[in-house]
Image (cartoon, rainbow, N blue to C red; front, side, top):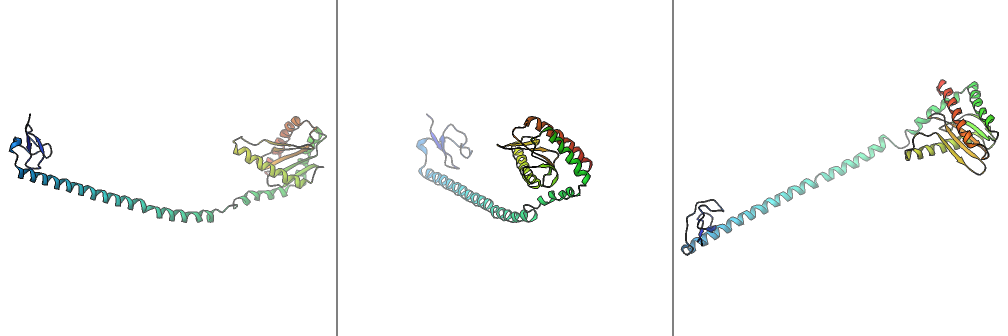
Amino acid sequence: MNSIVICSQCGFQTESNKRFCPNCGAPIGPLGHTQIDTSVREVAASTLFSRLQDKKEQKSEARRRANSTATTYVSSPKPVAAVTERKGRPTIFTKKPLGVAKPIKTRPSSKSVVLTKGMQNQLIQFLRGLNKLDRNLEASAVVKRDGTLLASAHSSRAKPEMMATISSTLYGIAKDSIRAISGGKMRMVSIMAEQSVLMLTKVNEDTILLIVTSPKSNIGLISMYSELIAQNISKFLSKIAL
């Protein structure tokens, strides 16, 4: 069995067959367990304790500095971010308030008033072609998306101006609903009631063809023919740049 020796540099105890101290690397010589001096053991123990105490204090000091640095770094940007966000909010509403862009879209509607009598008669001829197909036709009109009435051929159900306002409102709601469900481009809106059927057919991005007929009519045939009439009206309006 190997005897125990103590390193003269750090006081670390190890076996006598070791040439160097495993703790500090200093060369050591074999000393028997019975030859260990008590004073040397006390000095080595006190030296080892003081070194361990110094290392412990250094680690605690380093940990305290790291915590104080991390606290300063994390807490400092928060007030700046809050001030930046608070400053940015009023500028968004002052530069671009709600409802400013909407009147711009309604300005071109003034062109509809410039329609000559001959242009209105041509649009009415398109609408009268629907009356030849459906004898139960109650109302037909060409309406702008902003509610402006371009031409009207039949209005036994209600006033053409009121029908124009209703159709533009319903078409806008239907278009927004189709866009919300990604249904593609709007082509036609059909509303069936007990005594009437309302059909809104797209002419172009700004114009609608309005048809009000009876539930007794051939709805499928009328819807197909209304799309053909809408195409003819679209070609006519593109020529006059309306």
